[in-house]
Length: 147
Length: 147
Image 1 (cartoon, helix red, strand yellow):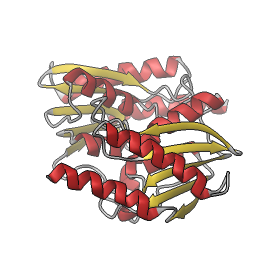
Image 2: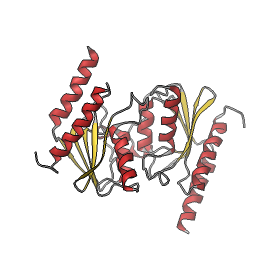
Image 3: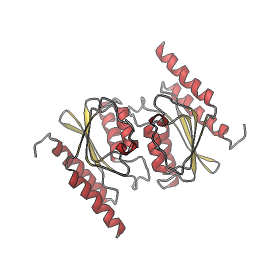
Image 4: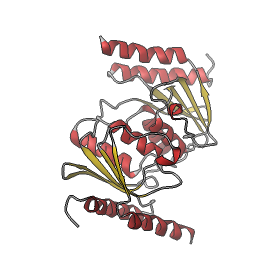
């Protein structure tokens, strides 16, 4: 696994997702990269914070923009273990982030299910990076929930 | 203006929007009401916080859920001076808020422009409350920006 590859950053996002799972949170993780530097890492904390807006992506965007001192992420990429929801895609649109890379698709709540062009027109999207691992983490979590 | 009327709460949201304008922020305000009690007030702070997620609605949702100690707003209404964007509508969907009331439409960035059913199916929507005042506040702000 090459440093700086999609897989490399997705593994960091997976490590964040694992932290969420440990807290009994839906296991989604995200990292934001500027150049080759990780400038934000976050995992879903909606239950812990009692806050429906505390998705991994939202926290990562807030952290990254705070770090950069500006509200745009035009030179950054975000790696997310699962396809972002409408809220997060809307937030990514405002940030004008250069690239969105996600692992597993979310056929129920993913932003692409709306059929609407939510992301910024200049944002590039890559999908399917370590998708099986990203998806397995979600499946395992919900299987355990149902037990 | 009757206490507890749509107009009453929209005036409170307008007062929040005015606070945003004073800070040179796009003047959008929001309040969240449970029963007849205002449990959250917020205004747009994207420039002040360098955070594209710091819309009035997002902050109001975070404040209201923190106050209630749960991540749902099923018995609450939100009053917003301007139609929410996709991000905020997505957040309101997660909160399962009972009612969304907004003043002015946003033909550029409003969630209805996507044509997608973004809000929760159980959420009721009322529009046009004090729309002229809400809209005038925005127009005045952008006119001043262009000067």
